Image 1 (cartoon, chains in turn blue, purple):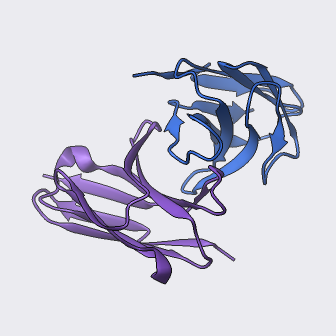
Image 2 (image 1 turned 60 degrees about the vertical axis):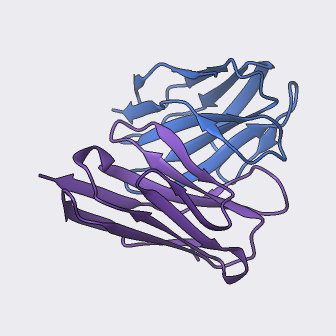
Amino acid sequence: GGIITQTPKFLIGQEGQKLTLKCQQNFNHDTMYWYRQDSGKGLRLIYYSITENDLQKGDLSEGYDASREKKSSFSLTVTSAQKNEMAVFLCASSMTFSNERLFFGHGTKLSVL
Amino acid sequence: GQQVQQSPASLVLQEGENAELQCNFSTSLNSMQWFYQRPEGSLVSLFYNPSGTKQSGRLTSTTVIKERRSSLHISSSQITDSGTYLCAFSQGGSAKLIFGEGTKLTVSS
């Protein structure tokens, strides 16, 4: 088995601040994803990386940057936090891009003051 | 509009009662999945690419891909079943999942 570790678990930021969320997986999976979940809503895809050194925009990429530093890690940056923003950011991985079985981390809860 | 409709949005049950959750898709799909999201936020895959009827313990998934619908039946619900149940689908053989908004289940004693 493997595990996906997201850090930090809770993130409190100030309006306009640049914030970075990190994700590590030890499945040796090729593909990694960042999803955003607003309260009472489904997940929306922000960025994904098909393989190491690849970066693809999802439906919600505006306001975010991402970086696939190595196969096992995928970071997400909120470029300018919005006041009163609250959401959960979930990282996931799959064996390959065509293998649709996703494994998720526990999430990072973001609050912006 | 919403590509995935889940119903009901929320459901409150007494322990021991059964639950039936529905997921309908407005577009053709390659495959779909059911996830359970714990109250603290983590997601667990329940059924991956089911077709027809599949059972795992007290959970039964019934999916008809060509009719773009799937249901999740929970029998003899327990307090620990409380949480949100999400369905998601993918198109074209990629793992870019599109999620519904979920059904929030609360089971009380």
